[in-house]
Image (cartoon, rainbow, N blue to C red; front, side, top):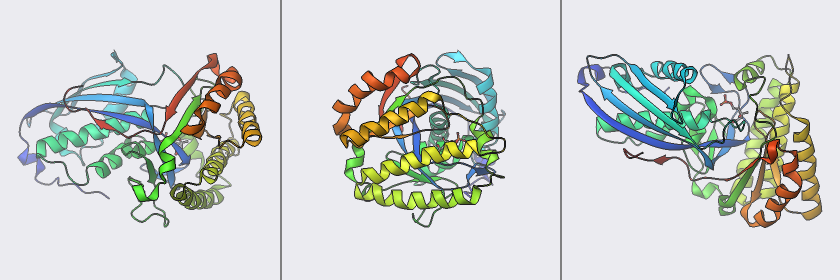
Amino acid sequence: MMKQRSDNEKSVFKAAQGSVSWKSPANIAIVKYWGKYPVQLPMNPSLSFVLKNSVVKIRMDYDINPADHFTLAHFSINGNQNDAFKKRITAYLEGLTEHFPFLQHTRLRIESTSTFPHSAGIASSAAAFSALALCLCSIEAEIRSGKSVEFFRKASFMARLGSGSACRSVYDGMVVWGKTPYLPGSSDEYAVRLDDQSVHPDFFSLRDAILIVDSRQKKVSSSEGHALMHQHPYRSARKNQAENNLKRLLNAVKEGDFHTFGEIAENEALSLHSLMMSSDPGYTLMHPNSLRLIEKIRDFRRETNIPLYFTMDAGPNIHLLYPKEYSDRVVPLIRDELAERCEDREWIDDAMGRGPVNLGKEA
Ligand code: PMV
């Protein structure tokens, strides 16, 4: 457990004001995290990459006064005050005082803006909690006059406490969360980035086109889905499957083996949805159009030999994964054949991103 210098911290607080701002991306998992223990510790290791265009920007103004108590004075999303989310963020921040003792005496104002299309059915919580955690680490660095070497590790740890998968959004490139013998230094408490030697350069041009099949809020939340894994009849088989898929995926990513990468992505997506269907009670988040699209993607791959694969999150939307060099074949396929199965023909052109950006005091 990450222990911070907290004992004498209270006595050394000085009044301070300032403003920090970060832009942080969503991520999409190839090996899925499914099932958790308190507090937000994963049942199995996962691997994801961050997106380029699906980001949340957070500006945090802070006013530290040793005589004051913690207050979240303002919270808005895209200019609108949001009371439900403000409650969730207040509870999150109140739970972090052990790790950020300055928070006990801080008045915060938080403004959040998101590039996610309105209700596209894509979870923005990973982007939001990673941006929040990065802002808190920046405030800590400002009042201590120095960014610690563990800055991103701490941000990942803190983001995890808000939303598990958020811990994978504080880095660029490919990221692993969860302890596994196949990656030294991996941990259940925070995510680690795969170093440049572990990712073949071919993967830097990875595209992710998100086909919006249904943008409505899902019937069963991820939290409820994670909880159902505790009594799941396939629980131990799932842990083995994820371990084994991660081992093969790490090798494929290093070797530039896009076919194995894609096969694992599809296997994981369909396994995730199978686990939901075989939970007790079982449920489906797939839509008939998700299945029709999967068939079309597989037909196209068989007929053209183009490495076009898919993954899915806990929802009906389909993420199309392919190397950029095939964009001139894949984009027409989306327009001519796949978009008709999307809600209002909507799809989002995204790609592997470069990770979060510190916007300083300007944003
Ligand atoms: O971080 P959560 O609690 O929203 O769970 C996310 C779970 C999946 O998106 C389905 C898989 C993953 O690894 O991101």
